[in-house]
Amino acid sequence: MNLQPRLILVSLLAAGGVGCGSGNAAPGNVDDFFDRFYAALCTMRVACGDMPDKAACLASVQLDSTDILTLKADIASGKVHYDSATAGNCLAYVERLYGSECTVTAIAAAGTAGSEACTEAFVGTVADGGACASSFQCASGECTQTDQLCLPSRTCCAGSCAATNRAPIPAGADCGRSLDNLNCETGTVCTAGAAAPTSPKCITPSTVVGTPCIVAYECARPLFCALDVSGAGTCQPVAATGAPCNAYIALGVCDNLRDYCPVATGVCTPRGQVGAPCSFLDPNNCLGYAQCVNSTCVALSRAHGACDAATGCLGSLECSLQTNTCEYPTVPGACP
Image (cartoon, rainbow, N blue to C red; front, side, top):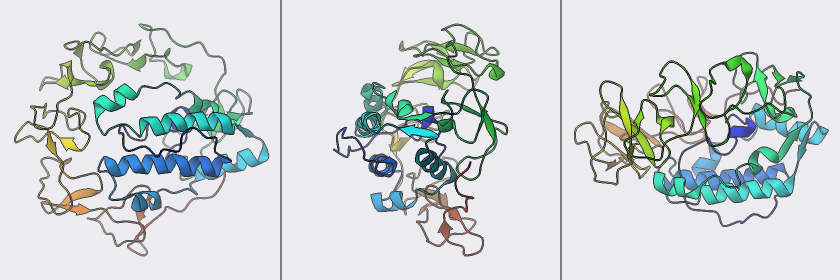
């Protein structure tokens, strides 16, 4: 999991589940924070069919990944300040979001109120331009990696802290200059849309059915961009189970996140459980903890379970070439 502050809690999965009911009590330390966060996340992932059970989900999370170890070391050294009260507010948002029903409509209704606490709970001390290995270390909250392909969860990724107090880009303005390292104003996203397909701009996602679109970000949930074979589309409501759906799009067209849209039928259909028949023509027709192997949904292996080239692993686990079992990837430890 990439622990960039703006992504820590809201970009893992676009799904909801059953809440944990722990309220917004402040976690005592960062370990308590992660325990509650992953408990909420795993409850949701089980409810949405992405994990077989909560124990398997929790066992698939690598809590000694490089980015988490670095954050803990930085809090201990004072490089990053941890605010437990704000972290509690963040968890209240997380538990509300992940406590919604497993539908696009319910998640959209949950809203984003309180999500800002998830970026304010960890405050870095490294000044603009200073060396960093994590966005948490930066006073600006953003570490620009030298190598964009580097994976912070696996290794130490060198970078420098971006400038603070950067004015947000207003709606309608150009945002395609990546070196500017700027963000669109709240409520807008940077994308090349139907109006200007080659010029990324900050746009406000549409809430109006029928608005022209070419990318998903042009439509506000619970709408999605329904594309045709030409690549053009319009914002349309997600479909209920059993309702007609747009089979040109693999995911995001059905309201229930446990459904998919088969090419053969064009109606939202529950994804298959382990042992159900499947087809390579519909790669999403198995639940998230399974994969289609020889026309049958086969369970992904749990921690320390057997694996091979055909059978994958759950979550952060990887198939070890030495043991042919699902294990956490080896990491170097905390970064300076």
